[in-house]
Length: 252
Image 1: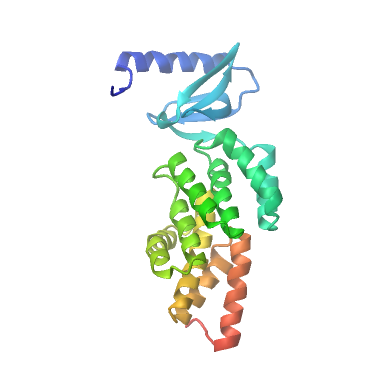
Image 2: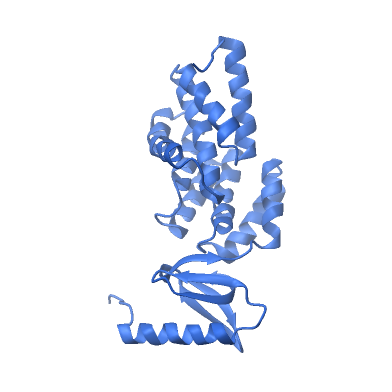
């Protein structure tokens, strides 16, 4: 049986109830939901469950479908900064459970930090050489953020392909992402990390093809312009220095 959304009058009633709940919410409510139709509500978002953003209301909890939510303004949970810091230090034993904890509670929530924590799981597995786990994590990210991942899952899969020396397929994944990054120039959260990694990975692909000048250029893009992933930036700078020293390569 095919499920369809509620009739228009029921949708209006739902939004009216949600608005009333928002007005009755505790003074401490500080998260702002923006719906796809432009309406907003101020609530306390506590989790994501079964495709719904769950929030506290007087006397209990309620929820709303993620497909009807365009954006959520919510401060990251306390463990997020620690997860990012551990990842940047390559302390994956600390970073992985911290990222998983956040993702288990908020995966799918349209915030930059929820996207970043969810994508970080794949990045950590890839950094540890666990290709199958990395691909599975990137696929989970794509399910949680279909069409809204800013190339994150493609860059993640490309990272695994580079690990496996499948440079041709990696290049196919990376080309549209680096083109988009050069047009936009700026991003936040998981998308910013993806752009940072994409140029580093493209440099590795081009180096494997003997295209040393373009490789150096992309390494330097990660090392200087797209530095959001500090681990990728450091690795890119090291590869740039090695190319200059070994081959005397310079960007025109």
